[in-house]
Image 1 (cartoon, rainbow, N blue to C red):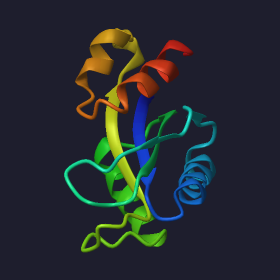
Image 2 (image 1 turned 135 degrees about the horizontal axis):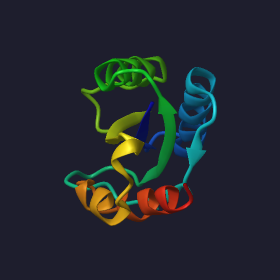
Image 3 (image 1 turned 90 degrees about the vertical axis):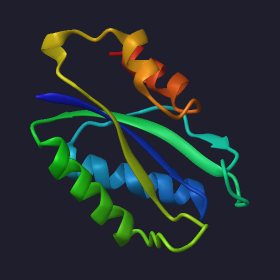
Length: 127
């Protein structure tokens, strides 16, 4: 089993959309741990604030298949990549083999987006 850590977010009806993402992940993958949902400014564009969170779960799905599933879910929730407004954004932040050990600080530093780092640390420290 692989531990997957996903960043989720939206800036259209943001809290509702994040809850929809979480519900779909729970339906597909079972138990999903969820960080706090936080509001962040849009980076690099003029757009409404985002609501972001991090989810964590274990699965035997491949990272590639998970990415494809997430992109389909984004589309189902109304994601239009031609628009500044974002109905659903789901990004694979980490895929960890627990047998290799969870060096949390090292894993957190691998996450590119700084607003996700404390949320990732929150989830992995509770593991």
